[in-house]
Length: 249
Image (tube, rainbow, N blue to C red; front, top):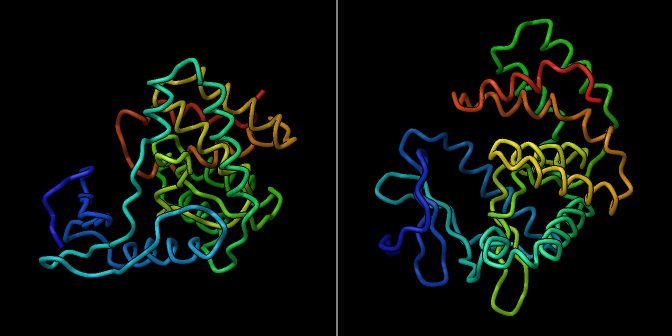
């Protein structure tokens, strides 16, 4: 494998392209359990009808764990929405339709979203009273088993030259309540300062899926708390304002 062409670089990983393969190489201190879980997620979701990269292998390169999967040639939905603003509504509809298609899938061996959220709440530095409120709210939410992406944003959608959409990055995939997945996408828009886009996205999703906006909003303090575990200083104040709201209006 050739590690010459870098696609993206993060603090914990570097992603390369080698012909028709993508190679994600993790830093030495990255948890092997998380690497293997990401590969297992990709393999399990790969058994659904969704268009996603195929897993090829999990290996070690120079002592570092690596995952090898298909390279998808095309343009991200982020790039297309920026390049063709006149097609914004068309692209947003595609974005929502793809997420709804994800939620129609069932992958029964994936981690349960509810369990993951409980663990995340416990990992926060929030006061015990707030953690209690979040755990209580989480337990009160309806129990579903829909496939949830966990990091659904336009950068993770690649449109190939023939117009086929592929969905990337399944490292955070779980099974659970789809509205939690929607709340996280809304949060991701908001964290980037794209409040207007967040609102347009949420309105469209709720209309197309016949979901009450208030139902999605009940998840927002929970997903904000889970996001705060990443410890990004630039997000702290914004996330705290979401977590401390008992009810959204």
